[in-house]
Image (cartoon, rainbow, N blue to C red; front, side, top):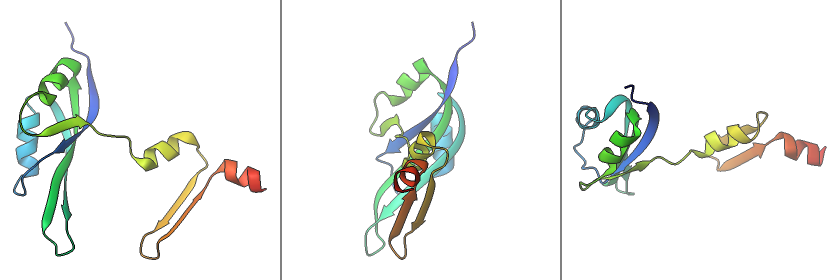
Length: 117
């Protein structure tokens, strides 16, 4: 009997500051094939770590995903779809320009061009 595995992107919250990619790889490989681990540390204005979380790409069966998300002190859930991914799915001709330093954000799509055109 073949198990149907799907690649999922998990959000894992509540991590300690000293967690490593290898630690997460080892823990989550019990449930499926881990292909990528991204650890993100949010810091306050003084540079002190405030929040540590990770995104994990894992090929996992639905039953193993439920086991993975159950119990423990970590917050584990399916990652939310990113803003850029949603925009690219809605229209193939969208252009997104973000210049954070100058705080300029410009979003043009085919619908806006047609409306103004």
